Length: 265
Ligand SMILES: Nc1ncnc2c1ncn2[C@@H]1O[C@H](COP(=O)(O)OP(=O)(O)OP(=O)(O)O)[C@@H](O)[C@H]1O
Ligand SMILES: [Mg+2]
Image 1 (cartoon, rainbow, N blue to C red):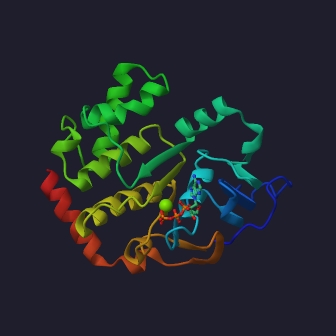
Image 2: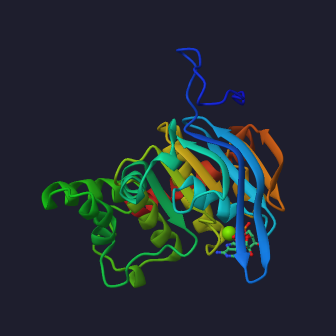
């Protein structure tokens, strides 16, 4: 996988894959009273379709700020961001909301499931917003829950599921609209090792299906699942390297997966 250095506004060769995410000199500043907080100090990054990327860095290095911009939840103070070739500055709030709903699946550290709704109803929600009819909604939500190994837990409420199961339900909610891009901010931050492994195996499977997955993590063990690591420090990219995720994962993951599949049956 080579990094494209081409400016996406410039025509590229017909067969050159267009990066799904392309940032150029992105700066994000927050005004706090009299001082400016420099959350991002000029980030340039291309992520191609189908990549599996970990964003790492110390607390306060700008990881969530970057993720919020990539997820169209926030806009750069200066610089350029193209999502799937579209300059997001040309979009209004309605366009951005539509893109968030259709193209991007979000997963957060704290699951963010609605407590009074079953797993199935939680996973159906993005389809409600997208205007999908109830029957189809239910079918697609059930399929997404099956895909994350929760076929037997659809009627459970969040309080009736383990942390790992709740996070897998949140992943099902993120993929139910069939988004090209999945963004996860510390998805294993609240999970024990075994549940983390479970959730990572789901991301791994999504990546194998050709989806682009970008996740933030503090943990080297989690980053090892991915094929590329981008490290931030003080609002700048200080490292960006590829790694052989398959070799790093080792067979214990396969065993854990087999155990889980057995337990769910
Ligand atoms: N809404 C905001 N207003 C002001 N400053 C902010 C805001 N959001 C983030 N910051 C500042 O920007 C910098 C980067 O924050 P960010 O949340 O991106 O860090 P992070 O790498 O995600 O950290 P963590 O690992 O703790 O989640 C920090 O110094 C933070 O205090
Ligand atoms: Mg953060």
